[in-house]
Length: 296
Length: 227
Ligand SMILES: Nc1ncnc2c1ncn2[C@@H]1O[C@H](COP(=O)(O)OP(=O)(O)O)[C@@H](O)[C@H]1O
Ligand SMILES: [Mg+2]
Image (cartoon, rainbow over all chains, first blue to last red; front, side, top):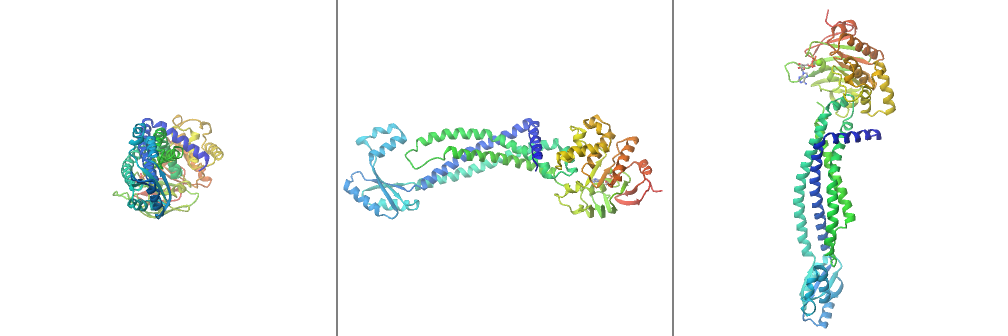
């Protein structure tokens, strides 16, 4: 396509948008609602997924040491732990330090447990050489003497992945329904344009314009509708994600879990929303064109 | 070159639109298509530019097998044909110049070429001075001249016209006829369906008479009615 032809198609498509007034508005609104939901769902889904895989990839096993264990017994336990297959590194975290973390994460009200009232345990933080070994190491460590219990991310990860698949199932169903409505509204708007220009279309066909040439302004009109419909969802997702990220990250600082970074994640999701908008717009237009370009 | 071999068009009515039509029209001929209303003149024309598809038979237009043409090829077939109708089919919101230019723009001709060619064809039909008028500001005869200018703008080898003078008074029809003959003299084939008996009798050319979808008469230099 020459740049002149492209320019002609672009101005034609924008003129049509204006000409269709409130129908264009309705179609844009449909895209806006659709993309808002898709945007929110995707943000949640991708982050839960990220958290789940952070937890899954966590190679840490926390071995809680029984209260009355002596220093020597603790040293003994450390040696035994070090012999377990897959263990790479062991560090000690005292009850005091554990409480500090809790206070940092959950707030100052936990401070009243300081000193002798501290209900927490001394902990050996055991790092394994791969996430695969975590479960085995935890199970074996649990059988050792002076071990109160062990904790690792695997169980949590499983629950989160279940949550992800639940969100995904419902999210996909709702999104598909909404996308369907948006495509329907767009194709009806474009059909109005086509009807008002059927005279021109028949002359174009008579003098030998190709179907793709005839189609372009309408496809572009649909694409504009989708693009304009994606503006509000993009802004909403950008602002609310930035805010959510700050709030949630503040309470995750002592863990290996993190949310997707706003500056990379938002660029991706913004692009995705714009592309989906343009896609359903163009699709709606293409659907309404079909029967006007068929041969008898 | 236009060639029909045993062409049948069945609309599902009692009479066929085309009933085993066979005819050949060579490059540069001028052919009238005559016959009563409902005989199949428009069907014959529409079959040529693939506005309707034949039920059976073979249709050749230049190098195209129109009976088996694909959707994609149809625009290119139509670029080799100029088509004119009784009702002109101009775009009301475009000027005369723009109406003719439009036909060249939508087949993506270069802007310099469009400008030059539009002026040429408007001069040929004698409407240079109306270039900036709108269709509703000129007479029916002038509108038909614009439609002819648009039809020949892309140098088609064949001009087909379905009752081009149907809406025009005798004097204006005469003007249109002279323009069509001028175009024919340049080597363009002209196929013209018409009811206008005076014209057929005064400007003698080959006459194809169609009746109930069949060729009833094919006569070089014949009159409107068989003597
Ligand atoms: N689109 C159509 N659908 C059904 N019947 C048609 C159609 N077009 C033409 N016909 C029928 O085909 C016959 C020939 O019509 P047409 O070619 O228009 O004749 P003419 O142009 O000579 O008046 C007529 O009987 C007409 O009713
Ligand atoms: Mg007719």
